[in-house]
Amino acid sequence: MTTAQLSQLDLSKRLRQLMLHHDLTVAQLARLGGVSKSAMEKYLSGPSSPRAVTLANICTALAVSPSWLMFGETETDEVAEAVAFTTSVFDEMIELLTEIRSDPELLEAFQTARPTDEKWNRLFKRDVTYRHAKRALAAFRDEREGVFVGAPIEFKRDQS
Image (cartoon, rainbow, N blue to C red; front, side, top):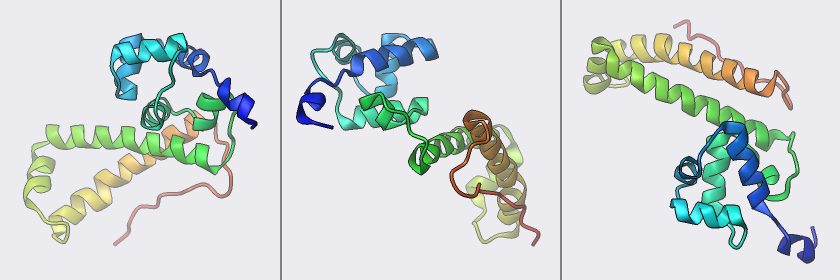
């Protein structure tokens, strides 16, 4: 990409596309990016561009590639897949923590047991974590429509 092309980057169009696609308000997009609403309004109108951290936050939150957001180019490489998979895992971890908080046995084990204890091993290594890892993988596959670069990651239940 030439210097002239870089000086004409227009992120505002793609930010607006994301807002429409995800049915987001300016305030919601600003929150995802970690900036104020007024800063996001400036990015949307075009006179200023977001910092790299803001772009990274938006890309992670909305599972879009940095190449698309910055340059309008789609990625089908391992980086884009890693972002999508990481997002799936992150979403599933939120559900896992919610499940732990709502289940007294899991919460007690999480707070008191050590990772070397049998109770911890039974609850977290075998049952709960396995279910959540499988769901994260399924969500990733659904989102990416089963298209993988290289071999897909498979999770196997620990038989010990």
